[in-house]
Length: 227
Length: 227
DNA sequence: TTTAATATTAACTTATCGTTATTATTTTTG
DNA sequence: CAAAAATAATAACGATAAGTTAATATTAAA
Image (tube, rainbow over all chains, first blue to last red):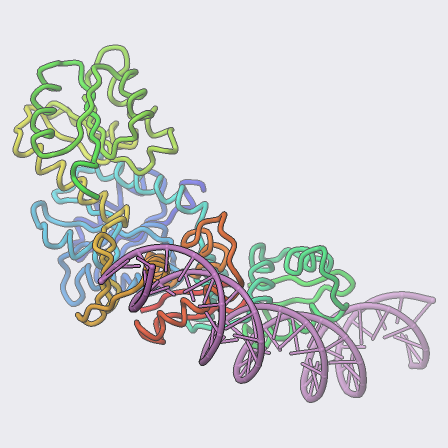
């Protein structure tokens, strides 16, 4: 992934921190979004799906720990990294932070250079994890291959195996038309022989459950999944 | 993991440092290996696979930064932590160190007590990452792998070996679906061939003892443990 | 060695899923 | 624009996978 495709969300109630940290990360080429409180932070996390979220622990209204917990509940953000900003020596918040699902923490006072390289280190970690990332998001559909779960607009939809695999295949390359024969190969396996209408029926079931407009028919060829 | 199973590799060209740091860590019960230059360090890292590597930044031939980069390239050492020894104020090396893949740094002059607690803190972090903690808690179930004990809502439940291992596996990643073949590999071993209904029977027994709702069936795939 | 505990298999039941057949609808093409 | 081709929709059937129980084999314990 290119650096400029990496989004970082920064949540802190102190404008100075947002300013300085945001500036430094932007300079590095990252896309930085900021929020000044937890509620706003969760909302932005939802809409932006940043790869990295930096949360201040001490915030009014909703603190970093709770914000972190909220974010961790969202299936589409399972791959995101979360790191806390914490005053040096606040050992408690580190511990609670890890419990809440944090990946790391950065101690204040912040030294820009240290911050930037720590972020780099974290994102390096993301890269290796991402190769095996079990969670894919397309539009408002989240596919969790590891847990065999599908979420549509945050609501879980239970799919039988073949339907799951079919969706999984189509969604792996949104926009690409999968030929009927290719679908049979991938989902059914090339030894199995099934009737010509089997795919149609499964597509129909998916349309019922996921939404009609997501699955486009390309007559004479096959099907594609569109956002 | 037990303290005496933790290996620490110490790389420094100054014999005094090796002596004093090595002594202190050994006293704490860690297994300490030492190398007096980077090349030797990389070789030992490869063969010993230490959990923690402490590198001096300033070394002749190959410095700590380069040594670190070399080590980070080795896939088998991805889980290892690397920390630098750096003279106070050498801000540069901290930054470069993080870039090279370091997890922390320790400033000279070394105070044994500070060193030891820093090492402890680092290894605590490793522990949580490694999830090999002997005691795991999921909801109101506590699994003690070391003592082969299970507690449900504080009450001990005695499980036979296979059931224990099955539960232990599923609970190691709550939510993740374990395929039947994976379960066979992990719990039974990939040479053993057992009938198709064996897993079911064990699952059933677990459901009886631990609670029905904790074990979800994913038809055509396998089972998962949920809170 | 005997007994008890655990593991596996077998046989059967139940539920769910996948496929096909049928009919209707839409799209394409001559 | 009409006929043919392709796909959509439904329901019904058959296949498959999992659940259950009981019996047998294996292992560990007394």
